[in-house]
Length: 132
Length: 132
DNA sequence: CGGTATCCAAAAGGATACTG
DNA sequence: CAGTATCCTTTTGGATACCG
Image (cartoon, rainbow over all chains, first blue to last red; front, side, top):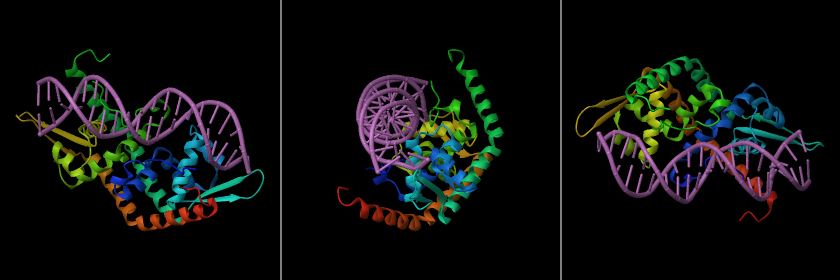
């Protein structure tokens, strides 16, 4: 049934914590952790809250985070199915660090944008035209 | 001449800070920032220190981090060429956060490993055989 | 040495259809 | 609703060859 990629390749040559770091900082991992830090969410709530994430990627991300022990999955045996996702204690620690980094990034965005403009302008100068 | 990908797609539909976050948490971005936190490095020093990174990926990573204003590139006009990379103040802040997250991940690896075993075992139980 | 350019294999990830 | 399975496109990233 195949559980999930999210960087499974090179796994043999990499240090194991590197993989975990990639799980929590992956495109969807970050967004899921931050949402769950706020409160538990159902599958489709997460999907809507994040927006533009395919079912496949959300499922994959949640399974990976669950397997790593960051997310708790509570599947109620009702019809229609209802599954709630929440953070474990370990997951909360991870989520808080990730959120801190995300917030820092937002705070510093103006510096980054300025740096990019400077970089692009000096480049354009000596590149001459032909940048099309 | 094309500067660099490192997640450039969907760029139009994503919030800009998300991109920066991906730059600093990317596979090679993390390793570069942590090495440079220690001290400045030449291109080939970084390559050796990190190990198993292709020239292409290292170049791309450094260019992206330079453009974002995290890394300073000092190319000495000598022959043979000598280029030193170091962190800017902004880069040092980023690197410290990233390192904190990386260290946290290492500290918690035993918990993660245990969680994975538990996950895999309960799965295997009700999956029966056929897991090959 | 420190790159750039090109080609190609592998992986990520979206769309769709289907299921319990 | 909450997935799983399949197909197919986009992106990533290594190998190689060449340049200032």
